[in-house]
Image 1 (tube, rainbow, N blue to C red):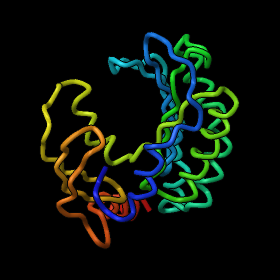
Image 2 (cartoon, rainbow, N blue to C red):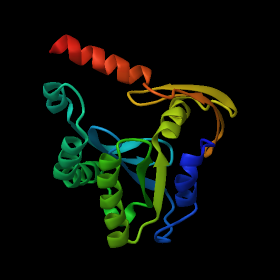
Image 3 (cartoon, rainbow, N blue to C red):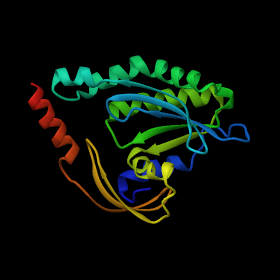
Length: 200
């Protein structure tokens, strides 16, 4: 967990299980991502293998408007999330009964977009009696290196995205020491704005 006051809610959620769920031998997680402008879902097993995935990109819509407009992103997530999740699950060959937990991005990101993924996920875990795993999406970016190479902890992480620039030490799966971050505009956001201005 990145040690900043804003992460206290996420830290609390990590300790909460909405439902205990049933125990099965292989752990399979349904991941849902709506932190910004893409609606994504994937079914992943404990080895990191992607069993099924689906993505709905909003890029074409936002290019026409010159950038991401949060209410528009929210509406597009709302219109597409059920289809995206259903496609990811069906393409995995796994039923919701065999899914061990639902993991969803809860921060950071656009509040309106995050809200759609969180609401949908909480309805899903309630319906299917599954545990809920809240995800800090910048921490998740940092940990993806361990999907292909088992990089030992601790390791230094520089995360550059459309909305964030974070320098941290990954000390464990949920243990991040924040060394610094941008206060105003992230490098990715600046590049996005430059790209939009060139296309207009």
